[in-house]
Amino acid sequence: MTIKLLAIGKTDSKELQQLTSEYQNRLKHYVRFELDIIPDIKNTKNLSETQQKEIEGEAILKKLNSTDVLILLDENGKHYNSVDFSKFLQKKMNAGLKQLVIVIGGPYGFSDAIYQKAQGKISLSKMTFSHQMIRLFIVEQIYRAFTILKNEPYHHQ
Image 1 (tube, rainbow, N blue to C red):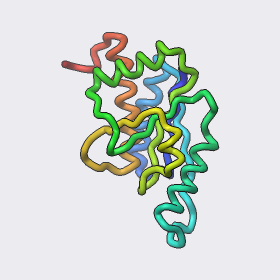
Image 2 (image 1 turned 180 degrees about the vertical axis):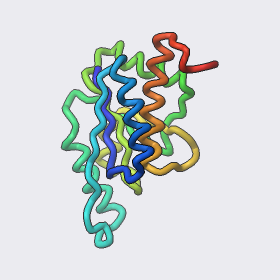
Image 3 (image 1 turned 30 degrees about the horizontal axis):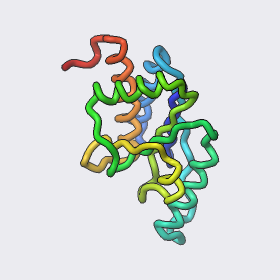
């Protein structure tokens, strides 16, 4: 299985990029992992929130294959602790998925088309974090999940 993380917009913080890259590198030992950045929309001043979500949604849909399982990182999604998230990933691998796609949306969330296409939603917290930080958090949690599945000492109960 490949896990692909789709994110809207680049990260300005070199420190966050470095940490995210560190966990991406660690993940190579467990799973095929890809981080795919969709460029920010230009001239958003002239667009409504809905229009921005529609344009971002079209860009997300272009990155998907018909067999992909789409999971959205969404404030209204399901909450997991790290062990339960590792079980979630194990179930996806056991199901024989070719690719699991996790998406971090733009500042206003997702278009209706993306919500309709999604097979699930996950919330990392009831708090709101910057999109740049969420990239680091989800990549670290995916890494943590695989160390849990392999009974490695990274995660402590």
